Image (cartoon, rainbow, N blue to C red; front, side, top):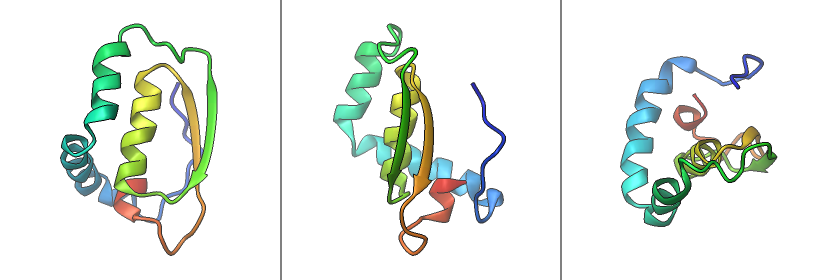
Length: 89
């Protein structure tokens, strides 16, 4: 499912954010192992997960992992001053 009702400060930062996410994935082996091991099974299929914590590159990796495992995810940053705009984009 793809949502269109999102707000980010600058969607043009998405390419930079994607590069940072790829780098962060190398530093988050547990989440990558979960994707590898359970990605095809989609154990979270049907789950609806909402979150509200600091929107960082690491949070983006977590969100993408939840989605890859089958969850429908909606997220909100809890602090505009800690939000990494390129991660949100």
